[in-house]
Length: 182
Length: 182
Image (cartoon, rainbow over all chains, first blue to last red; front, top):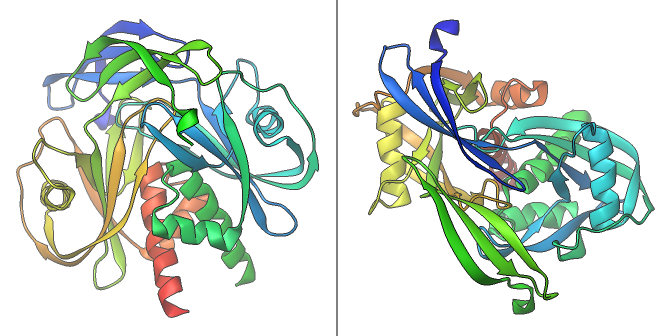
């Protein structure tokens, strides 16, 4: 379906920030019409579902300025240059929940907001957890908490977990478990 | 945990576009440190899992310029001013998959990328579908497709569905089904 592709006629950089950039592209649609596309440029991210042997998930509570709320999320972070998703996953585990994973299993890679953001997120299940301490980001204030996986799923249904990557992570772990049992 | 709140010392509008805006806020962290937060301002969105009586989900394939790919997604769109999430859901169903829903059930509301975007998405399950035609957005080129719900779940596991809201929607419908049976 290459006939769906939009030809880029021009591209203007609006902003280059610490975390994201913003580009405004002028595109020609397959119909011939010319339109604009606003694109948030993001380096990509990793998120991890850390599952302990006692079936409790390790989560972090964190104030999110963009939405003005404290959210409960799985550990996650932006990829550093030259870092593989697996390296990023281990670093974020150390920094945010002070552990490292003996086993990392890829759950999925997906786009958070493909209508305007380039952000691709790589999601892992982390097991065989052992204590490890990494350097913390001084701009991040986190509270570590743990919940049984079934309680975390109930928290999604109640609306107490409101973060997309966290919902995907918990539901995918649950779905993979069910599929393995069949 | 109001002591986690970040005091906004200043706010600069960088860009106001068709779909999104960009703001750069200067904040004082609870530690006293001053930092900046880049915020993508979004009007909010609605996404719908349209489930037919034959257990097939109605999906749309669409070229996404920001990620340079054709993605398979559930119908979705940005909320118009003064529109309720339910009105937006019915409008998007008409515009994108040419049907209207006799029944709309709220599945969840969640943030797509709370690290930098204000976007809150309201997710619905739509059933009792009947044909209806709405005005289409001339900047959107869509292909409607249907898949049995179980095949759509398999497509997530295979990596053929790579859109966060679509993954959340399909897994939540499945989770609610199974929870209801217990």
